[in-house]
Amino acid sequence: MLFDKTQIGGIDAKCRIIRSATFEGMADTNGFPTERLLQNYATLADGGSGIIITGMMAVSPMEPHQHSQIRISSDNCIEPLQKLTTCVHEHGGKVVAQLVVMGSAIALPEGSVKAISPSGIQEKVVTTEGPLHILETKEIKQLVQDMAKAVVRARKAGFDGIQIHGAHGYLASKFLTPYFNHRTDEYGGSAERRARFAVEAVKAVHAAVPGMAIDYKLAVRQENPHYGNAGVVEEELAVFVPLLVQAGVTSFHVTLANHSALENTIPPASHPEFKETGCFLKFCDEVRRYTSVPLCGVGGLNDPDFVEQQLASGRIQCAAMCRQLLADPNWVNKLQSGNAAKIHRCVRCNKKCLGGLIAHQGTRCIYDALNAKEQGSI
Image 1: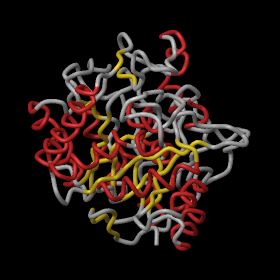
Image 2: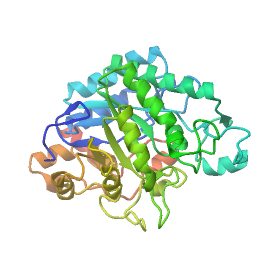
Image 3: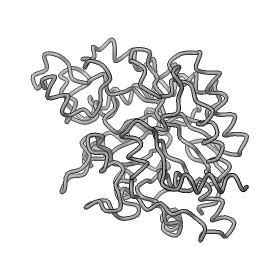
């Protein structure tokens, strides 16, 4: 089933392997894709990946431009992004734009009865570019409209779908979890109210471009032991998942996320809780209880036999990987041609992938030199 053509939320893909989003750090000073990024995406598509999800793309001109982050916050982004989608399509792949409102806009209002001090917020939020800002209701509504405008640009640029980033402590996830959201207005309190921003964003995207595939990156928070402050507790999935599907979500990308401890979001092979292959798939099982839409699983997926088993069982409909495709962008093609023994297997060492991310150098891999040599010989 790994090689089966499939449809995920309306996107026709040549196989069930998805390159999950990562921060490549390959945008120029304008926030446009660099030639190196275009080449990387062409290599992934040519290597057999069915769908490539971009690194997070900033949707709102309200927020400062993050270093090396791709932008989709104005119409002058459309033409540069067309180059990105064209290079993927020319190599037989599909590409999804990951849309994000960054964490610099906090979900806590001034005057909240449970308000946390600015220093306390800083301890909870991994990175905020510029001063913390307390969102007013009118600003929240504007961010929803910014998301809708961004998806119109994504369609014009040729993207096959979009993914709303609802994980990792960025704004959508901050609203969902009471760990961050202490609002006392219509965007805080009950699970239904905390879901309001995400639901409004999905509805706006769906209305702006009817028929556009809308994937939602959903982070689950685990208790006993506790991991994933940026995720939602499992018992509240019964509220969030149906509301998001009713709003227009066509698939879910299910993970665990906590950017204040990236070794939990991107667990190494030595992780005490998430060292096994497919370590986050149990969260897909929880989400499946509340929806029939396609689910994409993640979490140390580097064993092709294991991936095939999960797909064949129906546990997931697609398998997403980032580190394994950094280790070997030809993973799918090597499997399909009977050259599995030649795959550079990701060892989940996190030396250059997570290490590069933390150092603001983009994601790299210990196999980079070997991959470059192979690409040069093709």
